Image (cartoon, rainbow, N blue to C red; front, side):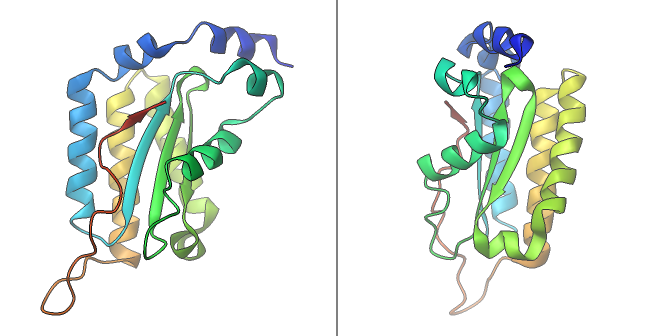
Length: 170
């Protein structure tokens, strides 16, 4: 058990999320998701969690393990074309994870997601949380635009927006 990690999680609450993501930042993130989703056939969700609950924390749950739980909880996997992507931030650890549905993950792979996560985490280390998230959303959107372009034209309508674009605070 990492005592420093436990202390960091115990001292990071929802107020920390509101401090680094005020309402205008949440609005900007929502707008970025809407804008990028107009350019591809994917569905993006952003979720931020201040810290882990005590039991999972003491059990050593990682941000990646929690992101997979959140992916299921928010039903990101439940899109008609298996095209959901979750960007999950565990604020206490400044750790971001990207979990993609099988239809997307098979084409892009873990290395793509890891590169985007590292870029976002670099911004977080500088205290640039909003900018880091926006960078991540745009990077995910670029990859989705390349592999899953927006469909337009008669008989080829864009799929419905199946997932809410508003960021989720857990």
